[in-house]
Image 1 (cartoon, rainbow, N blue to C red):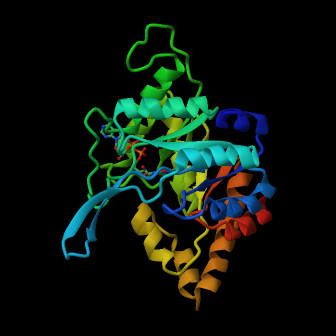
Image 2 (cartoon, rainbow, N blue to C red):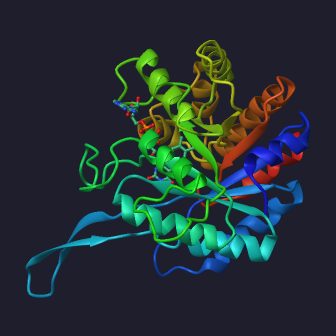
Image 3 (cartoon, protein in one colour):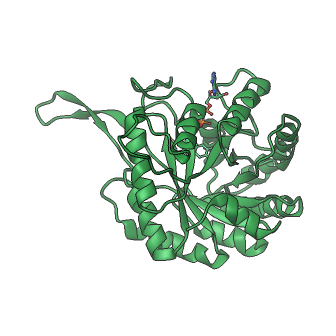
Length: 319
Ligand code: FAD
C-alpha cells in the first residue's frame, strides 16, 4: 500500500479525488457503509479517511427509575473499517488518530496495530471534548495538542518508541496528515496564533494538511497564501461537503464554525423542500470543485457524512 504523499506526487499535478467516511453507529451493519463507498470507486480514490470517535458520557434511565451514568463509544470500529477498505477495494485507508481519550502508551499500541496491518497513513488530530463537556481535557499521560501526537508518530517513524526495548526497535513509516481551518479553529484567539500551531505540526513531522469544509473558495485561497507566506510548503487538500438539507444551513456553521456565503444562503432559503436544497448544494459544490481544480489543488476531499449519492453527482461533473 502507499502513502498519501506518494499518491499526490504520482498524480503529477492532476487533482486527486478522495473521501472521508464515518463508522456506523454501534450495532449497525458494515455492509451499508461499504455499499455507500462502492459507487464512489468509479472516481478512483487512492485513499479513504475513516474518522475516529472517542468515548461519550451519557445518562441512561434504568427500569427502577434510577439514572445510570455510562461511558460508551457510539461509533467504534475505525481500525476494522480500515482493514475492510483495504481488502474490499484495495484502497489505502487513512485512520484518524486522536489525542482525546488516549494515553501515550495506548496511542503507541494503536499505532503498532496499524503498522502491523500494513496501514501507511494516519490523520493526526486532537479531537473534540468528550460529550457533553465543552472543554478538551487530555487523559493523564495523554496529549493536549495534535502537534505532540505528530511528534510521537514521527519518533516511531525513526524507531524511537516510548520505552526502549532490549532490541533494535523497528521504525514505522507513516505518512502524517493534520487538520487545518481556513476560517480559524474555533478556540484560537486569532488566525496568527492558529498559524503558529499549524506550523508547529508541520515542523514536528506532518506531511500534508486537510482542511475543514468551507463554502467560499476565497477563504481557502487566502488560507493557502498565508500558509505559504508562513513557510508551510506541504500539500493543502481542500475539504468539501455538498449541503444536503435546508437545516444544514444552520447546523453546519454551528458544528464546524464556518460562514456560508450570502448568495448560497439566499439560494438555499429560496428552496421549497429538501430535494431542491440538495440540488442547490450539489450545484454549489460542483462550482467550488471546478474552481479549485482549475487553481491546481492537489486533491478534493469529500466529507460523505454517511451518504454518497450527492457526492457521486458532484464527482461526475468534475472528474
Ligand atoms: P490542534 O492542532 O491541537 O489545535 C487545537 C486548538 O489548540 C487550536 O485552536 C490551536 O490553535 C490550539 N493549539 C494548538 N497547539 C497549541 C499549543 N501548543 N498551545 C496552545 N494552543 C495550541 N474529530 C474527531 O473527534 N474525530 C475525527 O475523526 C476527526 N476528523 C477530523 C478531520 C478533519 C479534516 C478536521 C478538519 C477535523 C476533524 N476532527 C475530528 C475535529 C478535530 O478533532 C477538532 O477540530 C479539534 O477541535 C481540533 O483538532 P486539531 O487536530 O486541529 O487540534
